[in-house]
Length: 337
Ligand code: PEP
Ligand code: MN
Image 1 (cartoon, rainbow, N blue to C red):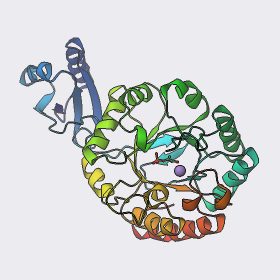
Image 2 (spheres, rainbow, N blue to C red):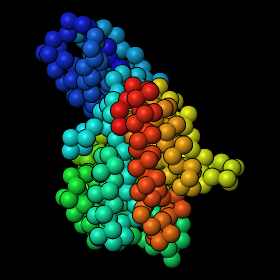
Image 3 (cartoon, rainbow, N blue to C red):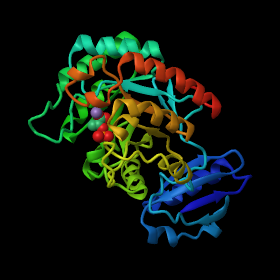
Image 4 (cartoon, helix red, strand yellow):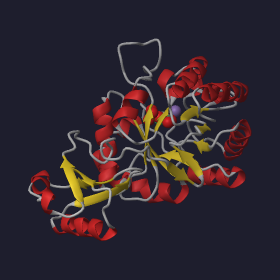
């Protein structure tokens, strides 16, 4: 339910409404708008419907949120959510670029990549220490050792770290080393994992599942938010279709669709979206043109020797060229890289 407050509502009236909600086991989230403030009410629908809204001072009207996702919905919060990670904003006018290897491999290599992408203008270093591989015999990541290398790369460059959490058993470790927790496509509907990251105070990049609809994607964001962590960044990374020319089908229409339905930032991962290095740049540019709030791009100096996803990784020179092109695309849509 959305409670629309009267323009002249007082702080005492808002406190009173919040108390009333609390005593019925409901949670209220106040959202201060430019013209009007609202309270989004979450909890047992039957209890909410029984509330005598018209009798409570300060309330103008109450409207049900018809979408199954509530906290994530644009109805709940009109203004775009901007997430601040160590001073780097996601969801603002500036479009941060998250770059780095698919997997963290060697320390020196990671440090070199971090320095290189920073020099090109990237805002985050990414790299997996726990890798969701299709084959159990493929490289599974360096675990904590890899997280330590990421922390050293942050130390050396100042770039905040994005890395994937695959299992709640590693949550404390990831929280200790990472600035943003990535939930991979394969875990988008691992509901227990979502609930667990919902309880920590760290931004989460939630990747769209391989066959997830937009509604399912937003319901997964809702799982995280329902536990109190509202710092969710959605990531379109391509979906499974009948097409085999690309690794996945990058659904760029998801950007404007999500922008209508939710206030959460939307970033795009063209690397996994297409799976081929020479197709990454055009889709990265298209994503920024379509309104993406950030990009996730895999970079590796020796793609042939990469332990995972070499075929979709950009060499430094290609990445540098792309960053220049992205600046011009961003300017054309009144954004900045
Ligand atoms: C990755 O970012 O390296 C990754 C494994 O992504 P996804 O979960 O989208 O496949
Ligand atoms: Mn990868």
